[in-house]
Image 1 (tube, rainbow, N blue to C red):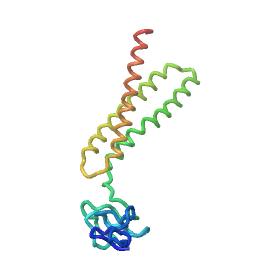
Image 2 (tube, helix red, strand yellow):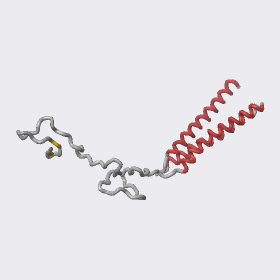
Image 3 (cartoon, rainbow, N blue to C red):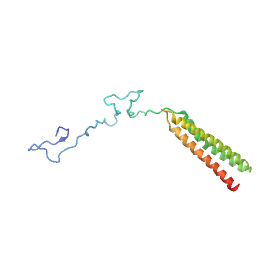
Image 4 (cartoon, rainbow, N blue to C red):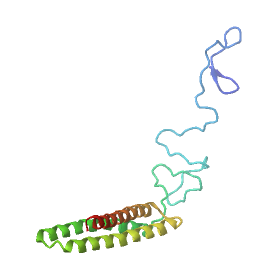
Length: 179
């Protein structure tokens, strides 16, 4: 076998000096593609050809991909995002507590206290929902920090606020029609 000027392997020429038709072989590596390291060997990121793998504690270069086995650089923690998530999740726990309180009031037979329990539950849930939304918006606008917890807090706060407002509208509608 011999290679032509483009690196393509071909059969030895026959008597007429021409290679036989249909005897071309594909090159080992595609045109312009870099040589891949053997399986299990670390790969270098873009712009790192010829450089040794980074040593522990080194910062990745701009545009470089993290090496295999190394954690990806994480965005900074966002305490306001966490506070937003907690403020958005607490109304769900309070809802269970107020549900148990309503069951206890119904069992005792004093149904007049149900309105006070529902009102307190609605007010606390609305305050926590607004706090979750405000903290989440502030946390999302901070640069360089993780926005995942803040987005979850905003979503929980918005869902709680919609729930409280729809409950108030429903109560007002019931009072107007049956009141």
